[in-house]
Length: 325
Image (cartoon, rainbow, N blue to C red; front, top):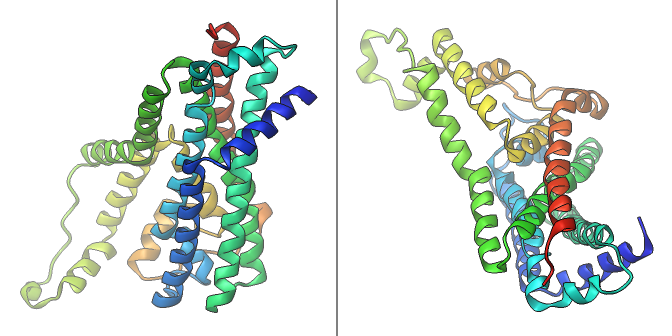
C-alpha cells in the first residue's frame, strides 16, 4: 500500500475518532461490556449448560448487543466515507492532486479498519478489566479463546464497512446513504432472522404432539415443556426447523460471525447435539482446542471474507468511474 493511501487513512482515522457517532459507539461498547460482566456476576453461571462465565456470555443472547454494535459501527463508517466528501467538495480537491483514485478508496478502507480496530480493542480491554474488577473468573483458556475472536470481530466489522463504502459510492446524498445503511443493518440483524423463522416453520410444519400422560392437568408448565423437549419426534422437528432457518441465514454475515464465536468458545457443532443437550439440561459445550475449532469454522471464515471482498470490489469499480463533482 502506498504512502499516500496511508496518509489518507491516518487523516480519516483522526477525523473519525472525533465524530459523535464514534463516541456514541464507544460509549455503547463500554455499557455493553460492563452490562455483560455485571449480568454474569449477578446471575451466575448455568453450570449444567456452560463451564465458564465467558462461555455463557458469548454463547448466549448476552453477546447480541456487541454483535450489533460492531455491525452498526462498520456500516456507519463506510456509508458517508465517499459521498459526504463529494458533497463538501473535499474529495475533488484531493483527486486534483497527484493521488490515484485507488489510493483514495484504499485509504478510506484502511482508515475505517483502524477506527474499527481501536474501538474493538477498547471493548476487549474493558471486558477483561471489568471482569477482574467485579471478580468474574477468567481462566487462561477463556482468555485465549476471547482474544482469538478479535480478528474475526474485525473481519465482521470490515464486512459492514465494505457494504457501507458500496452504499457511499452508489448513493450521492449522504443522508440517503445513511438511511440505506440503516436498512441493511436492520435487514441482516433482524428482518432476515424473522424471514428465516417464518420459512423454516412453513417447511418443518406444525410441531408433533408427544404422548401426554392422563394427569397432564396436574403438571406444571415446566413439566409439560420437559415432556415436549425430551420427545424424539419433537427434537427431530426442532432440529429440522433450525437447520432450515440456518440455510436461509447463510447469506447473513451476522450468522457466520455468531457461528465462529460459538465454535471458538467450545459450542457443540451439531444442532441435534445441542437440542438433545438442552432437553436433558446437559452441557452445550465440549473440550476443544482453538486449532480444532478453527477447523470447524473455515467455511464461515471464507464466507465472511467473500462478503467483505465482493462489496468492496464493487465499490472500487464504482468509485473509479464516479463523477467527483
